[in-house]
Length: 109
Length: 233
Image 1 (cartoon, rainbow over the protein chains, first blue to last red):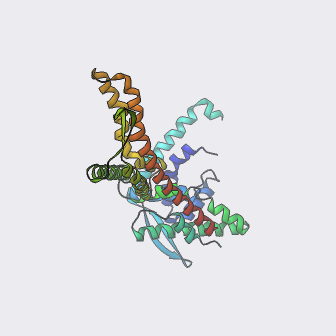
Image 2 (cartoon, rainbow over the protein chains, first blue to last red):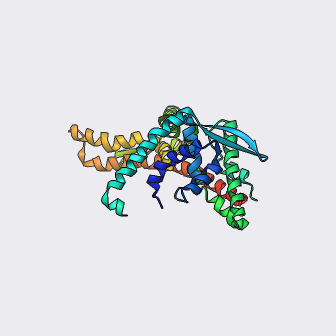
Image 3 (cartoon, chains in turn cyan, purple):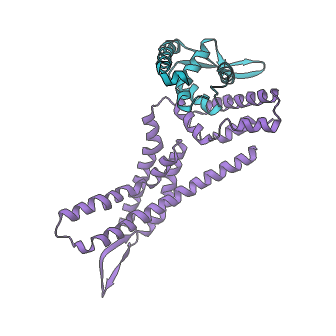
């Protein structure tokens, strides 16, 4: 399991990355992230929505109400500003993981 | 299936957003719990277990309410601090000071607390305005209410409740000792007693009164929350 501090840092990257695949509502977003990370990243309702609202305020994502299967859901999509944010964020995390891999003890772990 | 909409609405009561925005948040969170519940049921969880897991999606609703409020409002963190602490704190200070001035001018004579020597009172003398002390629980409750309503943390609520005694505390702990050191005409033999009496009359007693009001309000909120949880369960 990944620790809480690193999880917090990766949460925004996870959300932006998953929304790059297409618009999603909160529940589906959490489900796909959990599935794709094999349970390493799991968003509870309390963790997910304040973050989504914050990202929406920063205009990285945009939410709009949609109805499908007789359900009204708020779907989020990546904005151009979000796409712009995603690329340096990926770079930063990639550099961090590469740096960690270079550490002998981490590589052996 | 539990009524998620009712649960979220009751738990996020007091979310300081525009009514339509609050309704959207409630609908979205309830829909999330609804789908989580259905997903768990599809995976074979018993209804009660699935409902319990859904309720665990947010263990601290008060904290969630505060974080949603901060995230949804366009203002920055400073503005939240103003609403959650500075505004209630300064209002309680202003109200308590104004009320004290009114009582000093128009109210009954204060109660003087001191040792008597013959016909005269011996220093240190504590001047206690009973009507003012009696008004403080109400003022403290108002500070706690305003801070609580703005989504303030326990620390912000507590600090805004007792804020009016802060100037006195600073005076007795900082200004008075400094004056005593600098002024050699003061009777140093009664300084400690004066400090104690002053702290008691102007900090501890008013602070206790303010806190009593604030705590009563917090107790009221906690009971209301518990009764709602019982209803929603």
